[in-house]
Length: 309
Image 1: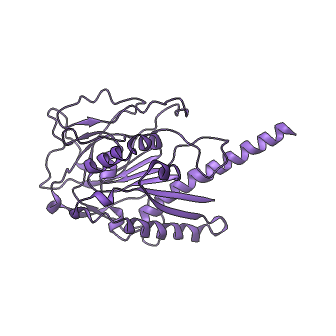
Image 2: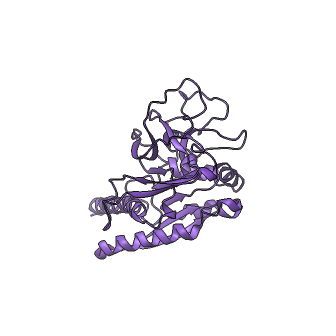
Image 3: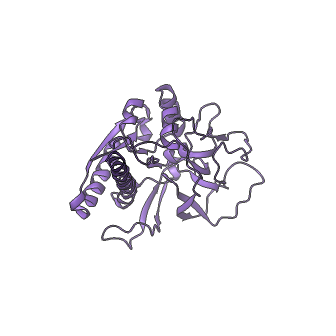
């Protein structure tokens, strides 16, 4: 069965300095990753389809989603004006049937990955937002600090120890992270089912709207905790975390990769490295959801047949 993996794309409305976020680079690494997985699972190879998403109808076709880097304020405005913002919130926070499967059996949330600006949009709270211009999708109970390391000229690369990347011949090699006007996860918040009410809104801070079920799909009984999947040592010239006074700044490292349930976020740009390991790892998460849904669907079909016989 096919797996439709999509990118939410606002590339046509980005500024020239944002051309590092080229859809071709995403597609190339996704193809490399899918070929690697297929070579390891020859008996159960998949027909992967990678497409760009600009409309709600295109979003509905997809079983997993990547929200790329760029300028998060621009991306949220594009999403709102094109009627995609609420469908994206529903996609990330509500549970769905996978598009290809018969509509019976267990309902699962679909995998979502946000890089850089994508991480900002997937956060439940964000600092340094532009007045009146930033809306969040939400999905990960964290507060992010936008453009934490400074302007584009202060972009940098760093070796990251990501031990969960276990596929390939270079497992022991650090992953080279590319940070371009990157955010960091300033704080991990309590896992809640509603708006982050404990987050007091200061100037230039915004919270995502409620994740409560609208009744069309059942919500999960409990939220999973946020898992930290990557950090980078604080830089000597790094500004203090955030802009809100009175909050502790005790971490010796900056959090740059997190996962909560179906939602994964990275501060850096894996697509700029040529190293497909994170893409392979993420597609494995997608495969796990697909295979579990297949199994649940088979069990539900067998139970239906037994009842009818």
